[in-house]
Image 1 (cartoon, rainbow, N blue to C red):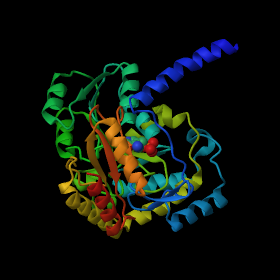
Image 2 (cartoon, rainbow, N blue to C red; image 1 turned 180 degrees about the horizontal axis):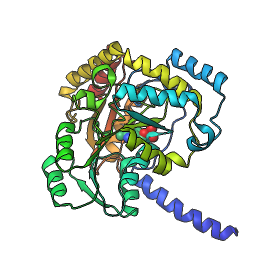
Image 3 (spheres, helix red, strand yellow; image 1 turned 90 degrees about the vertical axis):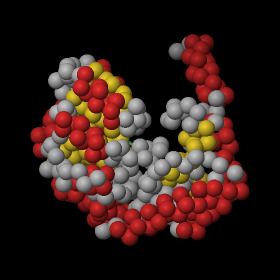
Length: 394
Ligand code: PMP
């Protein structure tokens, strides 16, 4: 390509990057020179980490690392192919069976990431003649999935956050062949819960599918960490498709969708982000089988996490920033202005505390925030250190 045309092309990118920077929205990564644990080391400095989704502290667990290493020795470094060709190995099958049993559904299908799992579900269920009903604050991957369904010809409706009456009106007005309600179970930027019993009742009444993204509830909420459905005592019925991610509380990576045998078979046959991608390395499934055991026996970890959540919320009451109601590991401190949120995150960083500033478009304009992510790995002293620094900066 001639020099001039390439610099013109680059110039247009640069202009946009500079716009982002001017708005306090240009992103950058930090390189960790340690594992991403309770303490993370960046540029040789140790930081107390409130930025990860490792809610049970399993990402650094020696037993899981051993299961991963042993799995690689036994099954190889890679899967070699997509699941439907030649990449579906015994550990993948064992993991699917274990996830189905754990969640109470007849069947489960594993994916490389939660993003890909979400991309498989909504656009596969909903095409021409169908309709999707999605919460306005759904995760980006669910929004992208909804856009794909739209491209397939589905009508898409976004209802105001957790607004059951608004959803009811939309469902009542729809004469779509298949109706698909899609929601986060725990909203990823606010930590609040979806009203799953009400959503389920509407799904029953209007004969709709209910697609639930339990990325932040799986492993943490409900008896034995079975997730948000267990938290609300909802049944694992055929009209529900439950997505869970395996890189957060489960501490490894990947995701699954659980549902009826027929729904899972349908996804396996039609879900493009399942079919057209290489299966995850089988050793990941080996580590996840070990992780599932830790989750099932992890009441002490969940108790520690809940104690940390209560301690933070209790101590944050006098702070000048709003801490919306959230009983989960995600605790957002709403700052408002993008630059103010960045400055606060920077001041905490200078004090050895890593709390990410989350800005638009990830969250609505004017609601930039610090997203404090708590973990069972944190101690009471860790929470107190964060509170003391926030009080000093208030
Ligand atoms: N859904 C929600 C609610 C999430 O928060 C995330 C991860 N940020 C995902 C899906 C995507 O999962 P993964 O990171 O495994 O791609």
